[in-house]
Length: 192
Image 1 (cartoon, rainbow, N blue to C red):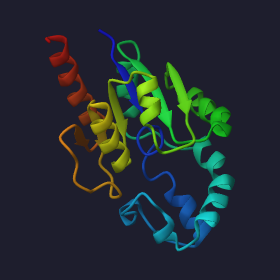
Image 2 (image 1 turned 90 degrees about the vertical axis):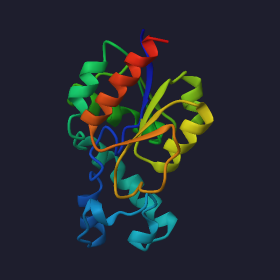
Image 3 (image 1 turned 180 degrees about the horizontal axis):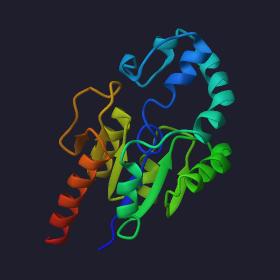
């Protein structure tokens, strides 16, 4: 009984601190992941949205090319790759398709599909792909997907997603915890 998993890439499959060294170097800062208390970087960086957009356009390909995997992500995803359909749904724009697929190949990370939607609003993509469980790091995405699509969402715990969560969102600290919850959930759905 194969399940369709929707999986965010940045901050979920990649380490949530991936952007930190680039922020520090570009903006003359000395922050750590713990200093990022909200997903929106504008207040932390003290720049305009146009300046952030220009910075992202310049640095996204560089950052994504070398992004480190989140701890245990590869091990867990390798366990799931023959058992479930892995559909990566990312806010990255389609112009990053080549660097994204190259990153998956370099990290020998299996995928059934990669959908770069160019927006943080993932609801339509989740519905289009018939996703039955989603894995995410962005708080409002996790809540919206869970409530709108009525599916469980695994939320990877970070300093920038500490707001309260609804019943259908499951907060985990790492991929091993996610795997344990998913295995329990998968076993319980087989019995129904």
